[in-house]
Image 1 (cartoon, rainbow, N blue to C red):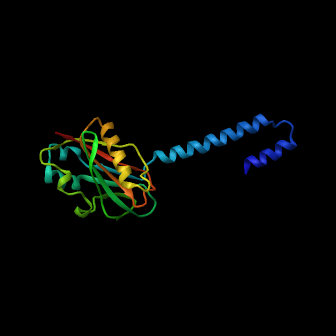
Image 2 (cartoon, one colour):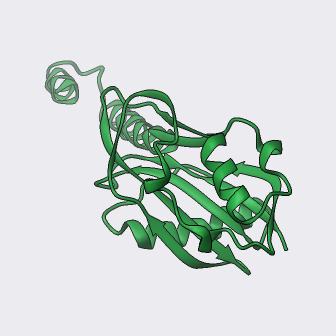
Image 3 (cartoon, rainbow, N blue to C red):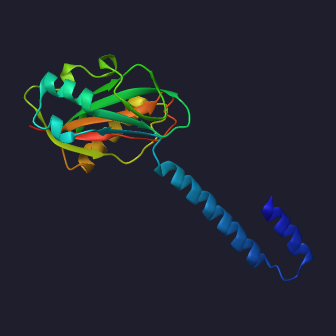
Length: 190
């Protein structure tokens, strides 16, 4: 609306030129683009560890149980949302298995992991592999409707960005895949 008012004023005022109108329109377009970029950068959901050293050297069920206790989930949303927990086991840089939980209620703020029913089973925690204790936050991403496809793509990128080839990628995402989220990469010692 402001641009149209400015154009109307330009017709009445000879001091306002087409060049000034073009500059104004360019500034508006750049502002709109910057706003969209900033909106994609933030994550509505994040996942972290209370103490990564507590899981270092653990493997199998001990790692699984320790991880469930150590996980901290964060929501920056303004209201409770239905979310899912997802995990991808990455081997040699490629996702081998993907787990997506059933939905659970996530209130804004910080919460502990909601329970064993929402966590992957023992096949995600091989006994011969151990956690290095290294945990790296991934870049924010928006999963979209194809949640498993997004987890598959993002898990490989996240483990690679963490300078690993093998590990576990963990993430919390809304049931619609519409909110930005940031996952956590745990690197395995093999």
